[in-house]
Image (cartoon, rainbow over the protein chains, first blue to last red):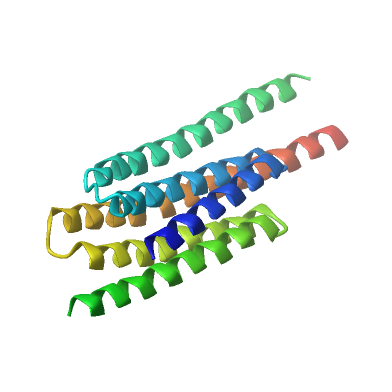
Length: 92
Length: 106
């Protein structure tokens, strides 16, 4: 059963990457990155159970922390460049 | 007793993986960013709860169960916040777009 879940998670991560590459706007890519990160957390947890290694769950927890921080940082960065563009457009 | 837990966790894991598949299919096929965010939200909260509770049944009463609960709580707190931040950024971006078009037309 864990192998089926692992396979489903890998397929889902591939689909999230397809959305990441195809995504027209930047925010589709941020959404794909967030989705990919959450699925990685689940993949690490399931693999931890599959290989019988309970330590993987600490890695999954830390990865969940990092994923959240990176999404917020990405959005904050794009918000910053918005202001720079807006600043320059008003100078025209 | 133990194979009942096995069967129950198998059911939870199966429904969880089915849900993430349909949710991510929605992320691929929906037309605009907001509906894609809804589809991604479904996978992040509901399917994660199902998958992790399926693993919890496998783990039984141990430290692993506590770690799984921690992961589940953390994801349930942060993924809506991230989706909200993303939605706000998209909305801001669209506001700037309309502002810029108006400033060019005027």
